[in-house]
Length: 298
Length: 243
Image (tube, rainbow over the protein chains, first blue to last red):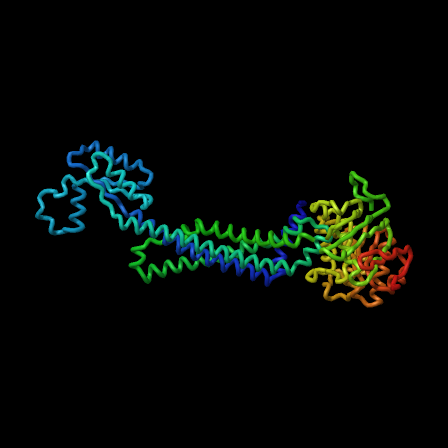
């Protein structure tokens, strides 16, 4: 394509948007509405997942040792645990540290009567996992390690969190798939109406001898621009609404915000920005590309 | 204009259209065109006449390669339209100019833009377009109205714009499908004078019509279709409306 033709096509694509203001507005509004809902659900689900993940990271397995174990063997066991892929963090808690923790948490001023450490011999490893669903497998492994006396875990917490994570995953996929399907249906209808209005222009172009590419290009450019604008508007809205909602939650429900760890908008946008723009551009491109094709057989 | 430089010569140098036993059926049943054979030479002015359902529209659609013959061979400007590849159709159509009964102008663009549109879509450089469009608008007598939108023009003027658009790419053949169908007798005669001038300048003109007065007044070649069959082909004839 010649440079002048490229600019002509680009300019025609832009002009088409203004020539068919109503159609352009309807398309932008449809894409925006769908992507706004998509962004909203994504933000909520991403936060849920983040909260569950944070809770998962707090779940730990405690590994106790045989009474006659040597320090060298404890260190060896620690290294073995660290090498496991499902393990994110391992903390060694000595018997003294364990007693200090117990005193602070449960006894406070009533600990004066204890002259010796009653938890002597109860030094342990606190093992944190990447994926809480791997807890059972890790416990089975640890129980088989020579020198390990007992492994304590919270099976119910692990199971609940693991199930919650799975459920959120399924709900996310389901809702996002439905939203995308609805968006594509609405947008293809809007594009079809817009192009049907200009069926005559396409047929004139074909009769005069325009190539399929030349006929299609302005419509595709128009579709891409509409898709971009349609994606940018909900992104800006979500940015604004999300920050406001976060501030509102922090101010009005301070207990909630201290318990739950919400994602910053930047974290949300890391995925939402490219995905929304890609969906907007993709829908605009495909919608116009496919719909124009129907009218090219003249 | 010379025929495109192609390897295989499919028709004589002085021929622009050759139909050999061409038939076209849309569905199983009565064919829209049946066993049509004819030759149209370079520089001819040909009327194709007939009542509704005689096959005139099918005739034009075949020449534009909008549809393909069901049977027979169709050659236009040394292109075999039975076998032409889809990607080569645009190049073939650039040798044709088309004028329709309903003008088919872009209503949101002015006269200049409507004509320039035909050049832009075949990627003529802008400098050349700025030179060609005023020239062709002067030919059709609309140089002074280049800024007007189609809605502000009379039917005759709109048809002139359509003719200018068809002419600006310097076609070898001009196909006119009922170009006077929406015009009053005065405007119709004006358009006919313009088409005759274009023909005199060397362009082959093929006009589909059922306007007896025009056909009789012009005394050009007349091909009469009835129920998809050529019933007469007179070198300098009038409207054949016997039976």
